[in-house]
Amino acid sequence: MTREPRRRSPRRRGPPVDTPPDDARLIVDDDRLAEVVEQVRAADRYALDTEFHRERTYFPKLALVQLAWGDGELVLIDPLEVDVRALAPLLDGPGLAILHAASQDLEVLELACGTIPAQLFDTQMAAAFVGYGQPSLSDLHDRLLGGTLPKGNRLTDWLRRPLSQDQLTYAASDVARLVEMANLLLADLDRRGRRRWVEDECELMRSRARTLRDPDEAWTRIREVRHLRGQAVGVARAVAAWRERRAAEIDQPTRHVLADLAVATIAQRAPSTDAELRKLRGVEERFVRGSAGEQLLAAVREGLAAEPPRSDRANRTEVPRELRGAVSLLSAWVAQRGRDLAIDTALLATRNDLEELLAGAEGARLATGWRAELIGGQIKALVEGGAALAFDASGQLRLERRSGEALPAL
Image 1 (cartoon, helix red, strand yellow):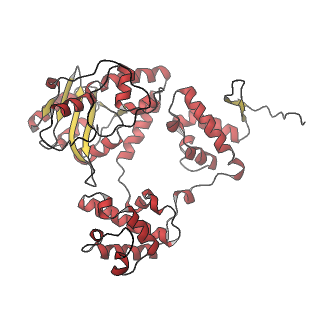
Image 2 (cartoon, helix red, strand yellow):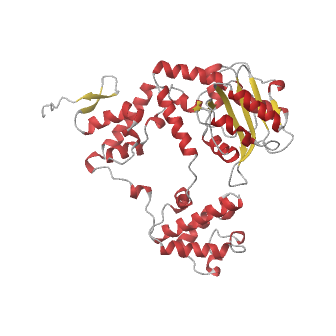
Image 3 (cartoon, one colour):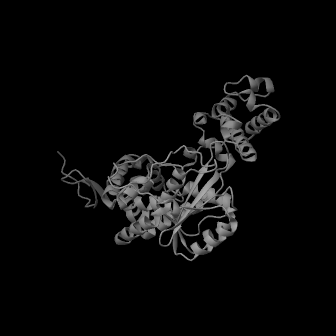
């Protein structure tokens, strides 16, 4: 697994988990991969992980696929030796694919295999619904099973061959007991009546994974252009969109096509000639070599001629003035509600979620599904005057039925 969030809790001491080399069978033959796919398809659930790099490319480069299923069966699949599109029948099949922090893995699988798991269970997502926050795989392993996973170098080169025994052992450990961990989480979710909530969130993650990035929205991810106004925003959108399309075309990181600072500078100055373009801060010679300079100037002209885009905030339905003061109070209540329910607060509701609900925005997350059941309906009762927030004797916020009785004036 290529990314590991920082641990939020101390590791519990226990024996290290070491996957023997014999269990980590490396698949480098297409016929053997076909046999494995048939075996795993017979399982009702299987663990899956990937190793990949994207530091030097626009699209992530798959370097290894890890699969575990059944009674200790485990293989490591080398995508540099076999055609991993053979995994498509497994991913499209009825088996439940178990991954940890799956969003990037789904993108990688979509590109490499042409599909993603039809049934997904994300153990990091599930952990957030049973009081574990959103832990790393190592932290969750410690808390559910005890022991420690093998320590691996996060910056190891997974594309270099041959892979070392330490790399194979580390990669295998990511899936060796993942099904067991998922079973424990599923049992806990069932006890709490929350399995459907996790299934809903995993399905949402699946649907998002199949949505390609829109080049026309690339400008919104550039911090340096957030302060721009008017036509400069239109230029930033056009230039960032050109950069995104060019990066995808040549499979290079966007920063190799044009730096973020250069996008902002071009948007501010709106150069009309090659000489003006080359004088701008952040615009290096390598960015405008060949036809790139002409394409950049064309993007500038396109941005100047277009209607400037509106930011997300400008497009957002405004919270009524009389309810703006409620946002901070509700944020405090939601944080407490998350602690009481043992659900990660960031997953339960963000400040933006609260603002969208109070503004009556279409598609507000708190208006439908499990979030509406837990807090959306109660917030609606509050703003409609049927409920009130109050402190109890222990200093905790409580949402109560409103009596309508005013305290006597002093």
